[in-house]
Image 1: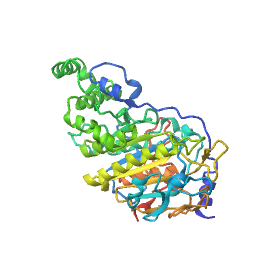
Image 2: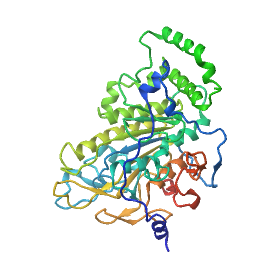
Image 3: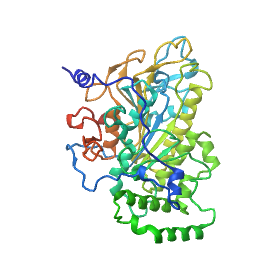
Image 4: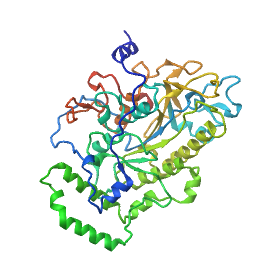
Length: 462
């Protein structure tokens, strides 16, 4: 029995469809900032991890080249054969795609000319398949690296929350940014059963910067209210006799206070109109500007998630406001981000990962001139030492299925493997199991780590 057959046997019962995932609690910008001066009950966000947590790991060799991660979630599922696994279909694919092989990657230079110039800086995984063909299920699966409808699915944290927890010990006293920031991500998964301090700070970027970081009555008034708050209930929050939930309040208050009247915050979250134009004058481009500035600030943020959608194109996929418009948005924003990270010197320490929840049907278009859902998809990697100008794996001539896995495990690549790759790049042991989950079953950073089912795609660095 070969590796693929063993994999299929182990997971043949995995569903390809399932129910929607319960949205885990997350910390909104307004809630985070308002906590600096109010007594709003946030106990539903609490539940700090136990002080003594049993943790097991298996010795592994991590890549360890990344300090930060920017994860771009392409919601709605882009057509892989029209983008990063291009397949020209006679009579179907527009000639304006202008296909060409650039730095060993066959690419639609007409759709994404700026990224075409950067093919030497990124790698594409083409042997990836999703588990699910339902948008909400697939998107959450991509964010938490496991089945959302599984036993621990509704309490599993976002990959970014795991990163925030793991990297907490590396924070310095002067770093005031949340470890996990989500841009343009109104939905999506949060901290799961982890403490609320590891939840994403969810914001929509603005040229005005981060809102609610000043008080309408001025800084002096804010400072007096802050002092008054501590006079009233600091003993109840600091080393609280009521346990960790009340101590969590202190984390919220201190975190919010660190963002108030802070020029570093202003510099990172505020951007110029000229920068917005340079990144494409879109909400996605603005998120990319903000991500670049957050990383440059070096204020403790280690994981940034950016959402870009919708790629759900069941009808008229080649209409001007559909695929061409979406790829232009992606091309402008991502290329500017990569170029700026290269110019600042942050590219070599920042891993950029990009994927949707699944792919789309191949060959001629449907009767509605669109493409429907398909498990075959792609993943994009750049930065942090990833070898550019290469592809991992290959699909058949239509792009409908994997014919060559292109990596050492000899099977199709799954979202769990992408998760393991992110952890490995950050020098996090992906085989970690924490025995502090609500059901006491053991929370695996990557499912089935003790069975060596999933693992990082080391070939990206080779």
